[in-house]
Amino acid sequence: MTPDLKVKIGALEVPNPVMLASGTCGYGLEMMPHGDIAGLGAVVVKGLSLLPSPGNPPPRIVETPSGMLNSIGLENIGLEAFLADKLPKLRRLGVRVVVNFYGSCRDDYRELAARLDGVEGVHALEMNISCPNVERGGVLIGQEPLEVHKAVAAVRGATRLPLLVKLTPNVTDVRLTARAAAEAGADGLTLINTLQGMAVDVETRRPSLARIVGGLSGPAIRPVAVRMVWQVRQALAIPIIGCGGIWTARDALEFMIAGATAVQLGTVNFTHPDRWVDVLTGIEAYLVRHRLERVTDLVGSLGR
Figure 1: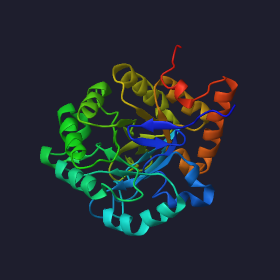
Figure 2 (figure 1 turned 90 degrees about the vertical axis):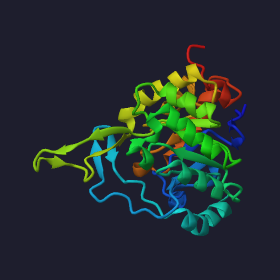
Figure 3 (figure 1 turned 180 degrees about the horizontal axis):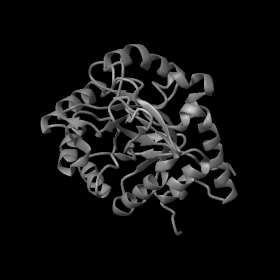
């Protein structure tokens, strides 16, 4: 028996549930030497803004126990350069492309979504709402349910593409922001983005990162991510893409059993850029071993 690996998130249908997370695989093309990326469920490209951004000054990456802190600052080439230089190559490869995008106000988000709507080769959007809102004095959009609802509703009105919303874990109760995104029209949620963290160089007694605080990723955050996926799955029926410290097929299965429809590999791409192949084959082997016909039979099966 060959299990059915297809999954759907709104109108987005992908051949399998394994994706590469934004910010960890460049624009997808960087992964070509490490396997046929058309075999992935999808590639989520590096977060795009309307204009190019240089990101934060270095140092902006530091290793931590079972993970890493980053303060890249969403460096990217901007929307126009992506559409002109990167997307045509991705189209030729036949890879399914999810465009992660961000802004500093609702108008930015709305314009980006409108300009990506209907673009050939863009299969879905992933809205990064872990960004400071300049209209609200730098408060993260994704930390306030009302702001989440307003921003997602603005994007939903600007595009017909399947819309994923990537939620920040740096909140008291992720179910509140998840519900706000779902009610505003999100087709799916990506859980989780990085946790806020900090490291200190004890010899110089200075922060290890130029911006002091960064985002913690890697296996250290996986239990937190699995818990949040499970919480949101219990509260809402919306499809969830789980990410946060996935290193093996077993890790991916943990997310799916807790409630994720699909998964994204992130930090592991820096050290094992072909790991997605092992994760995918491992999921399929698990389905065969447990005599499950469809990968969707796993989703939210905790306790069943």
